[in-house]
Image 1 (tube, helix red, strand yellow):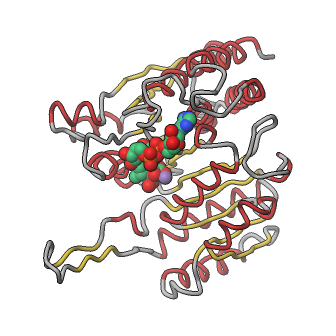
Image 2: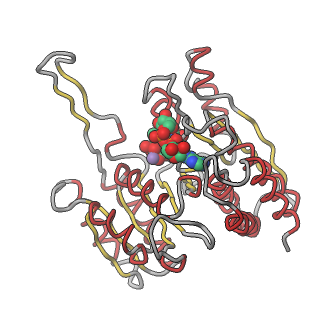
Image 3: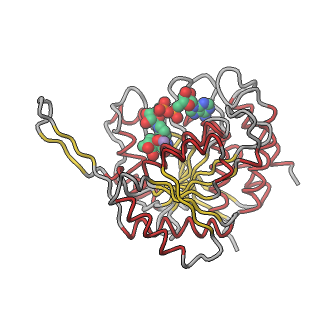
Length: 356
Ligand code: NAD
Ligand code: IPM
Ligand code: MN
């Protein structure tokens, strides 16, 4: 029995983050009305604007408040006015790490009527999910610099892979594969990263024993990029580390019609902290302020949030409504989209309200 009242924290963030989040919230309201639940929302002004005016990235009191919510919806953070990493590491990655959001779930699905740059690709051949380990790897910040600014400068950036961290991501991926088409692909670089990849491969091999119905495959990450373009049908669930997952999901986004289509959930499956839902894309400073951003990735991310909160019917209704609008768009974002960000949001919300 799912709860009927949810406390949702909203971080619109920077650039198009604010534009697409406004539309996602319209759709959330439509879903709440239609499916009989309520949301109590707290909006947090975090990101470039706040940093530039106060110097604050994520005050600990705000983080504690966020922790008291049932879920977090985030637009995007990062702006050219702020040095790279300040907001990304200080806000987004901090929440992923501190709230132990160890699964980054990123579907790569081509919807009907969506133009893909891959000639001849049809939706039946592109329906996969990337499970990106979200708390370790190259993202931990372990490393350092020596003799900075001199000709002898040395920089290291370590990839951290714990058996515990790898195994929980791998088990999540197997569980998901068992609910889908029973196929799991480990994506790594066993031919070069002989320490980290070996840990991943052995973990997959051992955990596979608990999932006799799931067929297990392996691809090197470079080949995975090729196959994502030439034959995405070979993938059902792909499990990979933090950095590879970041990179392959932007490629996956391109295959499914662009970053305006790619949704993601940062999950804490234990429920100890709120999970956070956000589009894969960033603040898109090149198009921000024009109403050209495609809000569908943010809307799909909201659908994932609804499913996470136990409202599966509402999640499906939102996904169906958003998918129904896609064939009516000229492009999946940018000046030639044929509709504004707000018009798309209105249309999806209206279809959620009237759908049966
Ligand atoms: P980006 O994802 O913002 O943009 C890449 C390209 O995709 C741009 O050409 C942009 O116009 C386009 N695009 C992105 N979202 C779109 C949408 N909804 N509709 C149509 N087109 C869209 O990546 P970037 O330019 O490398 O990064 C910009 C900033 O965002 C950086 O500060 C980066 O660190 C940050 N970033 C934040 C997140 C996040 O908050 N989750 C994710 C990625 C990047
Ligand atoms: C993403 C983004 C982030 C990442 C950045 C903004 C820290 O690119 O969510 O894909 O690298 O994970
Ligand atoms: Mn990324």
